[in-house]
Amino acid sequence: MQTALPADFRRGMVLLLDGVPHVVEELHVSGTAKTKHKLHVQVRNLQNGHVFERSFPDNERVPTTELEHRRVSFSYVQGGDFVFLDAETFEERILTGEQIGDRRHFLKENEEYRALVLEGQLLDVLLPDAVALAVAETAPAQHGGGDSAWKSATLEGGLEIQVPLFIAPGEKLLVDTKTRKYAGKAG
Image 1 (cartoon, rainbow, N blue to C red):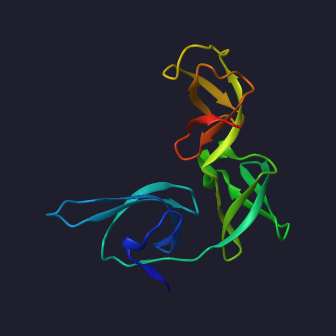
Image 2: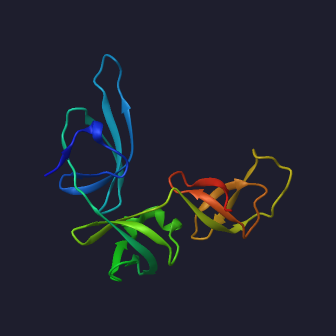
């Protein structure tokens, strides 16, 4: 079994914690010159979607696994399950609503995504850094308000974010998928 030291951890790496695959979302180091450095890692459980932070001493070897990357397109929602179509085999692959979590707001029908597959089972779908979404509902656009004034807007998919006053209903915006914040107008 492959193992890695915390110094080798990278975003997107898959760790086996208690035999369950977890993907590294974020990481940072804490400690001072007098104390031992510890790596704090935000991981997402690939079986149930729960995100939590865990710290690792710099000498702990952690089992890792290599996942297969496949292309899938989002097809539809059935009950609480999200159905994706494998681009190569045309096989339907399913993720539960719990596994998708709040990322459901960014999924669009027939859009292609990178998927993580372990032993033939779909574990996760990777979102791009930013997604273009149309404004479904917001107050009318106001010009001359500057960039410091914001208003609430509901986007396609149901995500609610703060946008500048000059944004009008129907406009396409770029939204950062990590922070869930306005990142500019879509070109």
